[in-house]
Image (cartoon, rainbow, N blue to C red):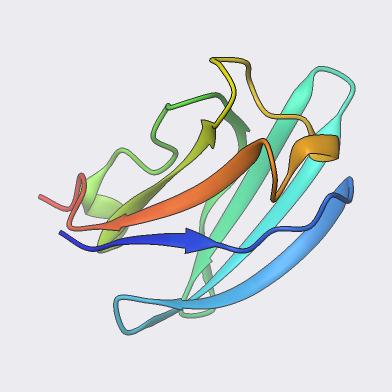
Length: 102
């Protein structure tokens, strides 16, 4: 299984288009008052909306959604849930091909 680090910026709202495992994936990441949330679109079709992002917790989790892998945030300095001010430095976003893909 290949692991890829997805570049993210330290901004409260961002939309990222990234090719993952041969698919066009759009990630919309936003900081809200009670945490960071993500929407995921796969090849133009939204498969997840409003998923809370927590440290070392897989975001997709379900093979039937069609995603050929999974995403998670990783705190490089501890085990805190992500906040946008640490994106790209303290908090990294990773994609692991084949993870949770049935």
